[in-house]
Length: 137
Length: 198
Image 1 (cartoon, chains in turn blue, brown):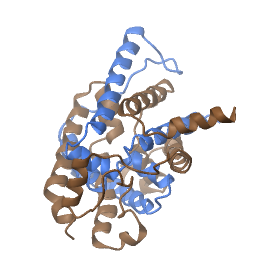
Image 2: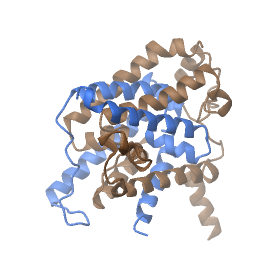
Image 3: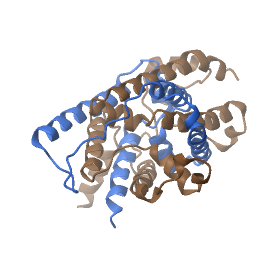
């Protein structure tokens, strides 16, 4: 039962991205053509609500259920990995029109061919794991 | 009572405005933070590799993956959310992407002849038949590989960097998001004209 809350959170995530059409290849296509504010609105407003919320948490010294300070762990202070990895991810995001969240959401919605996409994404992650020590970070 | 529930169902079934989606995504991020976790969907790909024994091949996968079981539950919930929404909350128009008229023109320029207001949510190349065409194979198999490789290389995907990372004002996430858009624009403007002429 301790996992139930995560299933509920995931359910809301799936419903949100589905009903806002963020799972749509065509919405991603539109975003990269700068033809609608919709996708930018989703990202910007999520970030804006997130920034306000995190500032409130800091000012009020809120804690999580384990009693620790609430915060997002800092990302590693590197830069090459974010540039190279980011560009590779972006190529895939625009081509496939789905990122990892929508991949699972659309799979659940019945687009079963996405199991091949998922398997390929796992292969990509696996190959990264193999090459990690040889790649510039 | 039943009437009221049907009204709620109709209300939810409308297309959601961007600000509602943004609010919900931020809410989901804070809910996970409250439980001591971090929003990040692509991390599950590493977990799934580790769970299938990839630790024998690379240290990167040699860790106690069961500690990330909660995140697998998030994607299980997301799949269930996708199923329920597509089945019961699709709305009167069905699964439609309400893209702009300019986008329909751009789609036509690439040979995808849709009409305004009738663009589906998912394109026709996400089918099993299409997987065995060159274009479908490149998009599904190639796209999946790039996303899996790139997300782990960059240390996160759209949820971890563009939402969670930017909201916590982290420079690495801003660099990653600039990378996402650089790659996306290269694909859209330089590669799509060739890909869609296949």
